[in-house]
Image (spheres, rainbow, N blue to C red):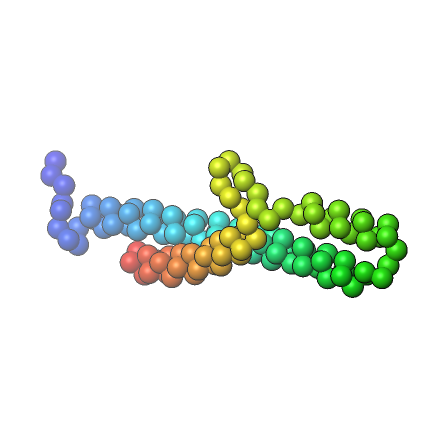
Length: 121
C-alpha cells in the first residue's frame, strides 16, 4: 500500500494539521502560564520595592513620636531584605518587576504566534 505524498494529499494534510496543532498548543500554553505569572511577579516586585520606602517615610515622619514607636519602626525596616537567594537564584524587587514585564511581552508574543499558527491550520 503506497502513501499518497502529493502536496494536497490526505497524508500530508493530516501531518500538517498535527504539527500546527502541536505548535498552537505550545504557544497557547506558554501564553496562559505567562498571563498567570506576569501580574503576580509584577505586583510582588512593586510591593517589595515600595514597602521599605513606605516604612522609611513613616519612620522619618514620626521622628517626633515616642522612642518606643521609633524603635519598632526601625526594627521593621531592618528586617525587610534587599534580595533573597532561592535555590541559587537572587531575587530582587527590580528583578521581579522586570520578569513580570518580560512575561507580559512573552504572553503577547505567544498570542501573536498562536494566531499565526491558527491561520496555518
